[in-house]
Image (tube, rainbow, N blue to C red; front, side):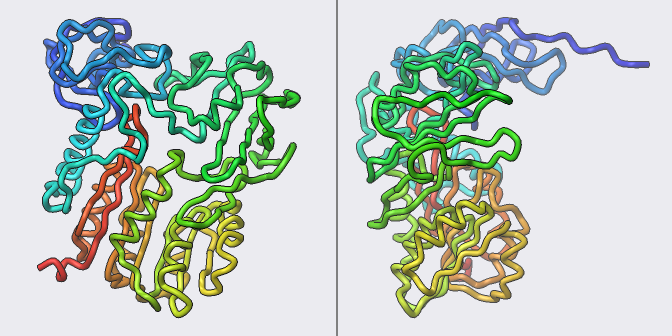
Length: 442
């Protein structure tokens, strides 16, 4: 006999005490019946009315928004952004929290993930619990740093630019994004009609005046004539192949970091905070302390940011191998590193390319994997290469913690961990862990 469908609880309201912050931009609470709620727009210690946004009777947990605050935390402020709040834009998680509270909560999340998934205390990870703001981001409560140099706008049916609502395809129309960098805001994307477009990505390069717009049209739609408030290059995404094609101007932007200029082809990956690339290169190089003549790997190397920094420091007698799966990123990396004859960039997935290289030993490793992490297979291979130090750059503390546990099984320990708040107002952090063979730590 077929089971009856469970009753949806969407719209139900519960008066709850808010517990600790959790990974993903929400806090944990429980209903009077003991059901777990993941509540957005709340802060630890508050008492709120939480309205269910996802879930059904008998589900392991429900998702909810705090729609009324009965007892507010001392860390609460009025959200500076008029588009933030329950049911509104999903781009920011902590507009309603003071900047210091945001960093403290992010630190609590990192510590919880390290303990639960890697069995590490902050002390065992060489971390003092501090989440460092990027240079220039220390702003008073109620102000928002304008840091996001790449913004992907969704488009409403009537052609207005906006941002997606949380866990939804619905679009919140906006007239200004407060976290958008000045170079993005000055393009005036929100002012014009984008009828026929599915999305519009605006890019403001760091260290150059390059600006770019990447258009993704709806099937069969014609591209608009792009006339913005300043000169831009324009790219479009082919609706069938997904390939990028140049419409106007350069097919790339020039980004500046570590004293070098990097070409990044239309829509390619680059850190979105203007200080992020330099901040991360500094943390990685300070942790690895490269020496002349060493052999290094740069895995998930993108357009060659870390590979270039390594090559510059290991010198003419050293060597660097970068591995990257994206074809366009590999082309950019080879261009960006053409002045280093002992740098080689291979295209393909790390877990398949690395074994084929025949490399049996290296001195240094940098890996900056996607949000899912490197995974057990890749970590096991890296652990067998005997590197004296490994730098792991992570945008997700859960994936980092899982991989650190695999490294421990492979004979490596965490020497230091640094955590950076490179995404203010959101739940995201960037971590740099430096590992070394466990025997050295005894």
